[in-house]
Length: 316
Image (cartoon, rainbow, N blue to C red; front, side, top):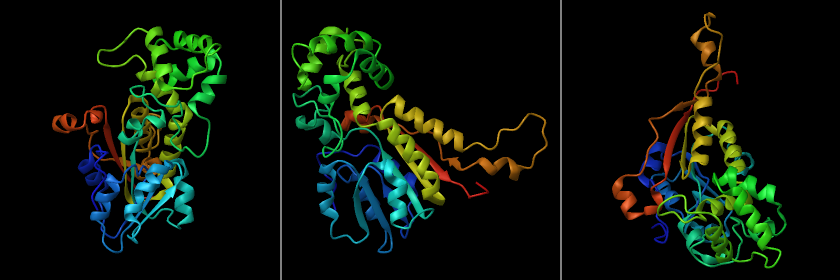
């Protein structure tokens, strides 16, 4: 089955290679999107193989219809923070051979003005990954105080002008509530000086609000923690991140669980005892897209791929 041409999967070959696919194995694509990664995984599975996809975007669930006749495939309409529950429902705890996470927003989500993710196209201030539940960006911006907005912009967007932007939003909404992406983008551009060449002044604020509305970092923390119990021994965890906050979480998680017990210097301890707390092995170094991939898909330029392997379960 051909992947959706409206979305180019980033680091596609590298991610699938990182999974080190067993044709008879069980794999989980935690971010189905438009099915680019899932399509390639399925092409490498035998009739006995299995792929479970997860996505909280209804558009992704619709896109998965192209695999409806493939008995090896099923998709769950959930956020990937529900990974542990989904795996338990399918009696696959400790039996999964690989987990793939492609974080961030897909091209179709950015390109569809009605979703409200992009400041480049006018649309309603929604920003929800799952449009069937939760608070929209419009609803939050109507009630959040200066301190809350500042905290979100500073912590999720690393926006230096967070306080200035937050005050401008709260002052402006007294006269006119924020309902459109163009309104918000225009106010931010008028309020905050452009920090970076070729980057719109609203870039960091839109990212921050989207991440807050969708609890993105919390979702990532939960799915990473769940991977330790979900994966079989030797199973792979493959994660593609698109900005420093995501990648920092992934890097710190993998580093923490790839190290053994910390013991006082000079204390005699066996290697077996030292390795008891070691749950992951890092596979290679982080990977970045090639220049040729960036030329074809400019949105791939900030992506980072990290891979880890689940080690033997030892007295955990």
